[in-house]
Length: 344
Image: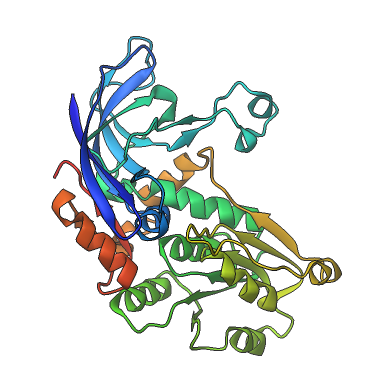
């Protein structure tokens, strides 16, 4: 079976390539991709990655087409979410109750999620119903945001600042409210373009109590005017340089959980370890691999607790991929979350 998929690297060098999808072996499943969201990682690749072209897309909702002879967990016609990295289930960490530390993961085997078909192992699939494919494609990024929020251990009625108003940041803010935060603020780039205006609007629709434009507003001053001692928790979804702001607004004994990456050389920052020790600040990196929290994330979408319609603003196919990616990078369109429909 032939399948067309997207690959990309620096300077918006995006290519559509045709690959061969082999019939499934005993433990594999052939799926037809109905929707695949654009992740910040994909944007990093097409903006900053200067090595070989990377397969694009891992926020996948699909339909089972064919199963291997040993597969009993899914059947043709099932609607599924595809995990980008799946725990092995048999290593020491998995067997000891810590699958989040699994290092023997099953991955997507080089398949682009922004492609027409994929061959994946059966244990990388999560069945779902009651959702359309486009909305369901938010399951993976919502699980990433959920993992960060859970790692933050938000106190009931506590104060939270989310740094970064991209889809992960907006969803983290909404989840912080669901988790019991009494105050949630969010930061983003200045609302001088259509992308940032739409993202701040969505943040307010999801219940954010304060929006802050970095580089334009005084983040520390705005926060300290309301919380003189700083906020209980900071969730960093923006690039690593944002950590400097996190240290300015976190309270004594607070927790900073962070997941923002950068592939263009700005991944190194200087930290004042003395300050961290004296103020008893906890840093918790969040890397949502292997995939966890997919079932609950899908249920949050199905139950309408996270409204996919407020986040998904653009849908596109192969012909429009470069234009949409460019708009995400330059902010020229009101893009919050863009989703590819590789089969139309």
